[in-house]
Length: 199
Ligand code: ITT
Image 1 (cartoon, rainbow, N blue to C red):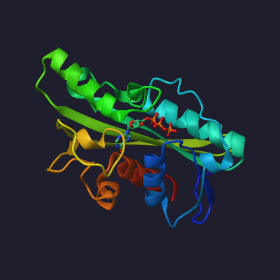
Image 2: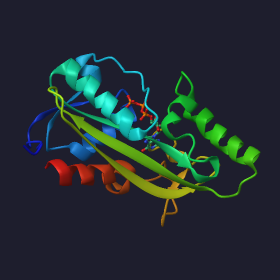
Image 3: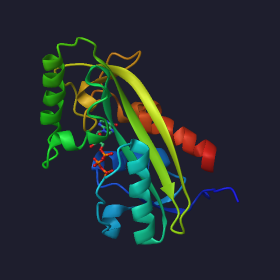
Image 4: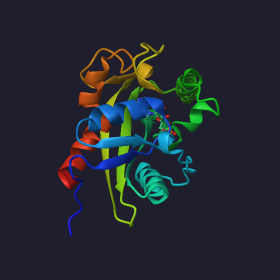
């Protein structure tokens, strides 16, 4: 039987990142009744996989099993071409235990200087996984390409947004109106694929 998500279904948004939770709520809004992992007191699983897809599935499955509800999880990150795709799945970890993204963005700049590379190409990836408590799951991936800009600009987004300029744009994601970011982002692109698969 094909997996389907009925409009109006109750869905756990399995993230502990408030910036992501806000974007997912905006992208999923009006289609589902959303509850957050925080509201349900769900633990944050350790991200032991080496890929966005693997970690998104791991987080969605953990939340679905714990809550008994259908769960959606996002695993995402920034990849820098001149750094062989780093920080990638380690994007959150580059910000250290206090999740200091000022520090993480400085680290990206310092690593580029060390590497002596002037290629500023980068991309964001979002893997979105939906898991059912009885086992089945679906996962998709979206990506947006762009270039890095230093110093960081704008305080509208989260994470690495202040240093990322999407292809064809002049402003960073940190300067972009949130509704516009939600229209074009890696997360929005992943959701388009999810819609095609599940809605
Ligand atoms: P959860 O696992 O609880 O969802 P997390 O922050 O640990 O939260 P990830 O492991 O997926 O999530 O880490 C992804 C990191 O990549 C995230 O902390 C951001 O800093 C960065 N990132 C992902 N999407 C981003 C976006 O749209 N804009 C800026 N940075 C983003």
